[in-house]
Length: 147
Image 1 (cartoon, rainbow, N blue to C red):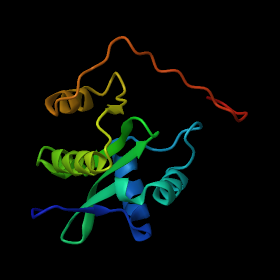
Image 2 (cartoon, rainbow, N blue to C red):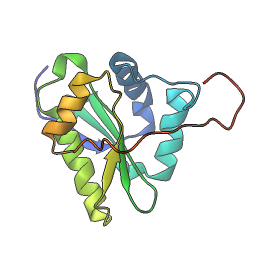
Image 3 (cartoon, one colour):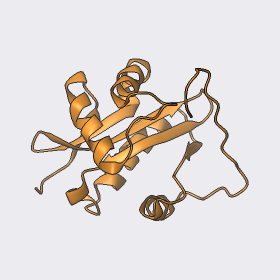
Image 4 (cartoon, rainbow, N blue to C red):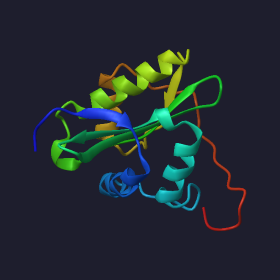
């Protein structure tokens, strides 16, 4: 499949495609974040213009979620369909999200990448993001259950 990537805000009908991209990329739900469908739907309610999909010929092939805490923007869950990776779609998704952050006056961005994700680490470094070796990431669940 080749063609121009159209980047737009996620619509409710896109949720199954986005969850499929998450599953293919190994970004499924966890006990902490919950089911991917619920995360997608709750995020769309908060900042619908920062949750983007990329489509080619009407098919969703990429997605990225942006969020912000009133101070810093965060980039979450960038995923591109496996057979289309390295075609520039991830870069285009991030560039559009960065543009939308800048429109809101958000100039500081953060994101997390699992240490074993060498492809993700290389991608973000190539995009100009800098690994912050001094920050440690803590988590805590406020519900009972396995972590």
